[in-house]
Amino acid sequence: MKKLIVFVSILMCCIKPLHAQMIQKKLQVDVSTGYQQENFHWSISGNISGQNPNVLSELKWTKVGGQNIAASASWNFSKRLVIYADYSRQFISSGTVNDADYSGDNRSNPTYNETFNANGGNTSLWNLGAGYIIFNSGRFSLTSILGYTESKESLRLLDRGNMFPNLNSSYSPRWKGGFLKLTPFVSIIKRLEFKADITYQQVGYNSNGNWNLITSFQHPISYQHHANGYGIQAGGKLSYHITNTAAINLGGGYFTWQTGNGTDVLYLSTGEVDKTQLNSVSRNGFQVYGGLSLMW
Image: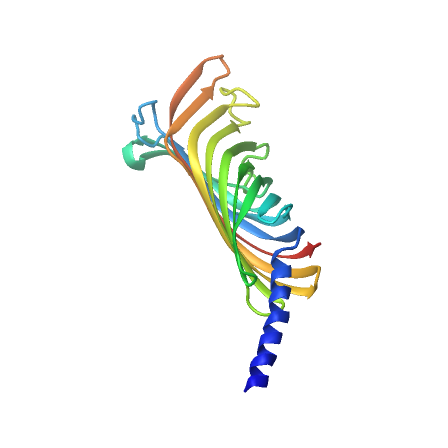
């Protein structure tokens, strides 16, 4: 029994530093590719007070999807301090968008309803921040990161069924502000790890729209939207170490962004400017990916 206790003690002393070493690598770079899909929705009312009617026009992008590529880097430059950066970009290749107008409250008395293709454009997201390792036991760690975030989208309204062959309208949102990320990490077995993350973004929302076939609107900016909002992202990945400095990853995540009431500013070709209430903007989606991590 004494020999068994001694053997187990020696084994634990050997294994624990390996786990700790995996967590405390000074520099880590991740690259990945996968699939991302989202739904995007906004609506405006008939006037600045949110009435006449309460929903005048709304756009709904549905199942807008395509390949996503991403890269991130973290540098543990001191015992508990970390610098973090990431960037991702999606190339949209599928999806539809519905444009509907109403003359009565609560989406009654429809005056227009048309569905278009949305299989073009792109989205991007980058984050830059500094973090603090709150806890690190070797097998488990928890890191918090505070920084700046910016998400851009280029959404399209394109011809569907050769009804509008010259249609190439666009909607280009931008979400930017601060973020707080929490990243728990656990070493499951010797070479297998799980890393999760949850991020909260407090952002300002601005967008430009160009309705290229409507001659009564100005171009290239037909209207603008302004509001305040937030975003929440959550994800997780499994990593398997093929060497001490490289691991393969498989993961996924979910995201949702939302604004409150804001302002819709319409620019007419006559030079007039009209303002109505932006009721809200919402965005939600998911991604799945595989990739590679390198550590030094």
